[in-house]
Length: 364
Image 1 (cartoon, helix red, strand yellow):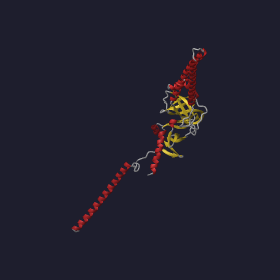
Image 2 (cartoon, helix red, strand yellow):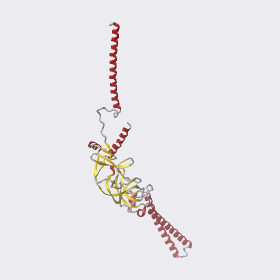
Image 3 (tube, rainbow, N blue to C red):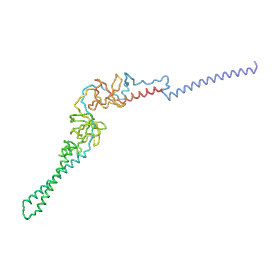
Image 4 (cartoon, rainbow, N blue to C red):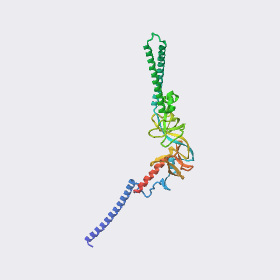
């Protein structure tokens, strides 16, 4: 074989070997690049390119019989502080919910002072009238030449003027008394007129006067002698003592109104608005759900009840559910229902979070 042919064969062989080596190198590099890309994608979008050995957390919610059930393990229940209790269905005294306003008693003080001033003015006018009438009578009875007719006439004129002052003072006293009764009712009005203990305690701020107004359509034939109001922000209940039916309604509510007394050291102040609860004398049978156990979502009020050993489902609380002892009487829950007393907000958050995940999965 000639020298030139050997050179050609050797060059061809070298080209083949070099080409194979380059191809192998490119393939190895591509594989490495793809592996690296997969790692990058897994870091940026962990849910889109999971490693073969990765496991997603088990879902905590499931739709069963058309309801979303939240299922938690014992460890998860302990972590969120979930507390449940089986509650019986019993008769509970029903309460009407009212709206209380602590009244400004400046008008009561003004009327009391005005009436006291009018009575004092009347007593002064009567004393003057008695003196002037007696003087005129003495002059007229003497009838001596030393006493001129003009003096007698002057004395009689003074007596008439003083008697007219008495009439005006009496009218002022009657007007103020009528005003007190019209504005505050017969009981408070009489206390204003007589400066009784009721008004004295109000003026000295030992007690405050609260006007409690029921929602339109709610009527109590006999207002309860005792009721309760919630003091914000802890919602502590304080007792109320009935005074009388109110002489006017709250213009914001337009319902039946009553006057109640609340202790001056209750934490309430004039101008505050609070919730009030009045016994109705009726009873409602059902499961009593404490107000602290309810949650608010999607325009409604809800309570969570147990479903099996580890499941919990939302149950609606009717807007017109009867109230008793600061709780809702659920007439549609069976006796012995397991009610979530603490941790309901965490269950609601988990339920709503599961809906967000479902929507996100559908968009993939």
